[in-house]
Image (tube, rainbow, N blue to C red):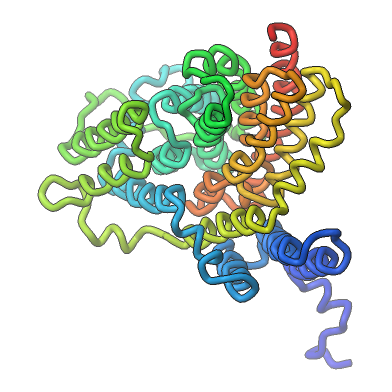
Length: 469
């Protein structure tokens, strides 16, 4: 054999392992179509979902490419209306508008202002030590991100506003691991920690709304915060800080460069205007209980002001620099979720999972099954879609079994905010779309944070519910 002809073994060795996800996805889809005891429509939709999930996890191609494949398969197999249903979701367009806001915040210099403010307040003793500076910024930014969840009722918007700021602060460090930690730690804090704030997560709002509309009790903002805030808010952020510090702290103590902090803190007109626009958006989001508008409209106001002639902070050319490929990913996620719902797969799965309970179950057992059911469904559909399908089933079951609905609703929301893979959440997809971390890094951080939550914090929360209800 000549040197120019590679042996089959060499070809196999040279193949990118990520491409193994393609035959895995094909086999999983084929197994469902051939052996799953489901109606034809449900089997076909589940097969499409599993094929896309395999490619999203393995990532042999960009997520948007897999999403377009999924949308095409749904359109050919079912209908164009179902395939395009994801583009009608306000959450999809909230991400798109949020990308514009993030681009405006970056180009306006606001990220530089917050960076200067953070550095201006940094103790001199930690400014020249990379490990100490990393620890200081990680703690301050993570708990500050949790505080932001109190005001902004959308994890997507918070992530897209914080991302350019965290990227700028991460550039202070030479080591990439520290850049990743400063980026992911606070973003996970504002995303996962939002479980402890009723208005901090759309899943929380959807769950409580469905409980009330199904005849259950009204869960107030204060009640939610008192029950979940200490463990799933503050406790979860502390856990995330610990994980981000353990995984990504710098190895070289000299690998940080902080600018001279002797100069007085100054701001530009563009920075002040952008900050004012964001505060206006926060005011709109934080008062949604008065006007009832979706967070999308607050984001639109901010984007219009930021790009408006004369008063804006960026020109129209900034739109061309934003990456909107995430739009296809979101469209596919919501289309798959709606398809699984329309084919009755999700109702069947939810009822099968809940049918494993005994006739007179205890509260801790019910809450444990709710966690398992929620996590299982989020493996095949987006978390917000799980809430819309599973919550009515849980309300019916809890009412007939005499189980209090408040802890059931709260623990469901907590479980729906425990993700392992980017495809499970539009927020994680948005983080991935920023091109700061790859899918493997994001999956690793998400999995560790979720496992730590499930193993350490969820038992504590269930124990509190069992003790006090």
